[in-house]
Amino acid sequence: MARDKTEPDETSRTLDKREREILKDIILTYILCAEPVSSRSVAKQGRHGLSAASIRNIMADLEELGYLRQPHTSAGRVPTGAGYHLFVESLMGSRTVPARVRRYIDEHLRETPADADGLVAMTSHLLSELSQQVGIVLTPAMGETVLRAIDLVPLSGSRVLVVVVAESGFVDNTAVDTETVLPREELIRASNYLTENFCGKTLRQIRDELLVMMAEERAQVDQILGATLTLAKRSLDHVADHVAEHGLLVDGTSVVLGHPELSDVGRVRQLIETFADKARLVQMLTACVQGEGVRVVIGEDSDLTSQLDFSLVATRYGVGGRSLGTLGIFGPSRMEYQRVIPLVHYLGKALSDVLAAASAGYEA
Image (cartoon, rainbow, N blue to C red; front, side, top):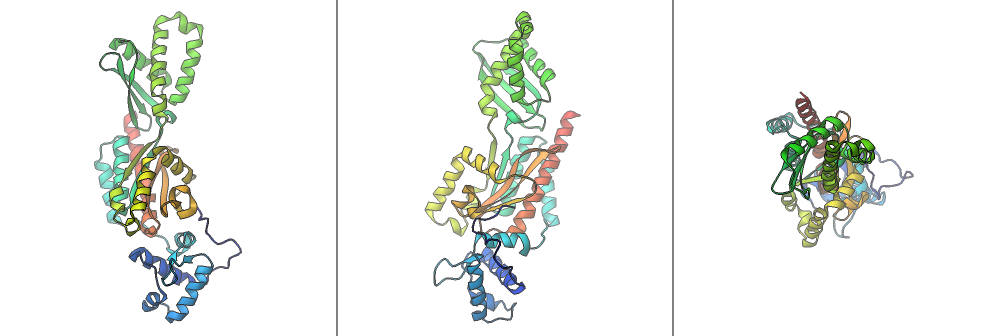
């Protein structure tokens, strides 16, 4: 799990039971009310049997250890990134997705048409709806996915629609200009040739092999094959830049604007700028989520979260042991981790399962 730059170093002492309980109460209270938590409010809860003065001393110790901070001298305390990380790792306990929420997710994914693009769109919506944060799904770059089929469809004039179907079920449509009007029969021949000879390879591998084949003598002798290879290479050249890009689905930006953290116009502008720079956002998302399991990135952990003091809870999804992309929840660090983390985990598994089922259906 990602670590916060402000986390206490290894020489910091372990918190005792009472300190851990008070820290947990402060974090849960702050998540709920979005206001700095005072020693008086903790004492009023009556769970610790301590006076406000005693709790204030413990809060001062927690601040010194780096788990809390005081926004203003007269204010209470709020959690730091280190405090949130400790809460996530050992204070919040195990959480599961309620049965009714699991049924809700399963029903919506089951009722969604069994194509990969529709399923990831529904997933981004569910992430946002069920968390009241921003739901994000990063889809694979088509150039990195394994080919199931290519179809070249004539449009008007010399334009051709290149339809790429990945083994995982994702579909990419790109219109290209072939410079000359090509008969439908030639396009069908090229489509069939590509599908039959390159199914199971990535578009990058296909382009490399086409270059080699076009350089060989047999491609020059066989005019039909040569014309097919030329058309195939030209089509893939046109879509090369497009298929190299990851797709990015974002749902719920209007929902997150209602959080107190975004009452400032400057922070709203930062949020809009973050989502406007798609390439940078994809790069940061990819860097944040490495390895298996759910990743929790908080505040200063990365450039993506530090600018807004946000958190990202994310995991990978895929088919047949192959990672296809990332899905997650992005919002203010004051989020309900005990609810969000299992939700992300469950949706990651649910999306992987429905994509695997859809892929098996295509093969059948």
